Length: 488
Image (cartoon, rainbow, N blue to C red):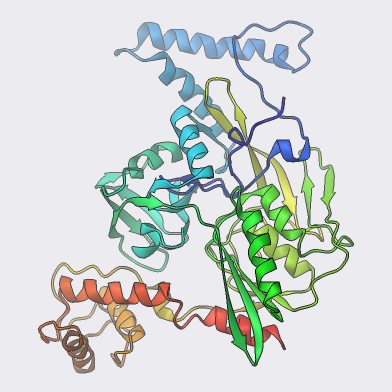
């Protein structure tokens, strides 16, 4: 039977929605390509010798599972619910696959996925995945509480409201972070390159599912379109088509596509977008099954666009974003930014018949030229990082920072203050006289007492202003480079 849209939830990234946006990554919609589902609804344990699904071969092994179930129910010290044992058995089987993108989605999780595909949802607005046993941020969503709080791709979530996530699976961890609009959650974060974990307090909010934004800029007298895609959900293809058409009607002479921080989404949507860009003499992508059989996907486009295009990526660009980026790269377009996340597999949500599903890796996707970017990512043709302050962390002030002190936290503060235009003279963590004067200038400009020390109030205001500057796109070196190189 075919799967419905609500049964096949976004998946290429395999990150779960932490109330969170769904870490879908790039998913296969079976009804769009007439593929048959591999659904197997478990109703009972009986089999027969003529079973064509191969279940008869498992009868002996499954009886051992049944025996373990009976032993636990009859002998364990405390009462155990049937549901707990059954779902635990399913999760245990999936865990043996050692695939971070394969997991069990209970009824509640599936309901939340269904809601979040089609409308807005409540949470912190980020995508996560389980990487080496750690709950890891794939990407915060544009304009979300997660982005505003400074969370970044590859941040590891260690604790939620003081409770460790160690030993929890991804679904259980997500349940700890999820919550209603207006409620507060404190995450303990470990960031690469930062010695000590730090806490981030986030107020959950309603996260609208808006996926495509566009604008124009004049570059050397040429009208240039910029389209940002934040994820690949059900309506993204139509939104992209509409906004690209509007830009072309305005007479754009070049286009920049921005998929930075985009964790992916629906596979068929990535295909639909690329059908506007990749001509029919080159595959959009290739799909490989477990038997090594490869299917090439083509468009009907006669020729490529008559204007130059570049694509921006970063470490938060995953899955369907990578499908778009590597296809454009194989077509000869520039890719600007930093190496992407690296997810080259496709998952399918297979219904269990009771509202729950197993999200299972079923396919690989390859670039038009047959490259598999899994765990490698897409390398840019033009490597460009953002200013140093883009990578700073929230300021943690237990005791005020002051003259002649030296710490990693002070170094982070100096980077942030310098990013706001206050010259600290150094960013090595030593709080010298010039840093003191820079702090005083900032305090005076913001109607604070000019003590020259950084307390929680001053630190919080530095952080707030810097986040706002980044959100406004100031000093966006990757975009500047994309625009400069577009017409070269």
